[in-house]
Image: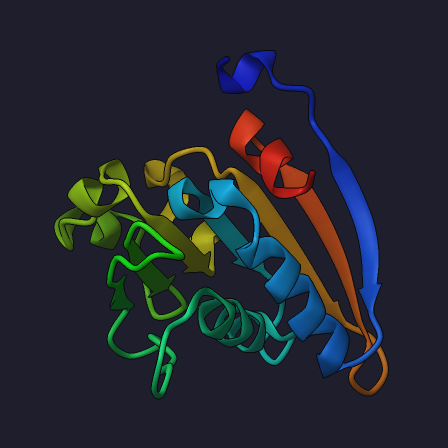
Length: 164
């Protein structure tokens, strides 16, 4: 099935607090398709993109401190194979500091995006047309206090699996 064959799914949800963000991340982490997904995160500064990623990575079993890749551009994680999981490569990108989409190409990210594993991308619009079609796009908007309005948009059949 290609992205063109896939019916677009759009869901609007509210995260009332950080516990709701964590619960969503834990549910997403349980989806078998997570290990082969490209998830883009959009939203203003402070919307909760990195907070969501931290909850997702912890839910997947990443140990220790999870750093924001704002300055490094990418942080890589490798979950070792165990009886519960076959091993997983994870890359967390933050393109906020990109001034030109060509920086994506020059950084040599094409091979990472072509390899198996989970890719999480904050500020994907800064990479311009270089990114592949995302499986799932989360647009996070801060409302009042800790409340977040989240629009989930699938881009592929894998994205639909994630929302199943």
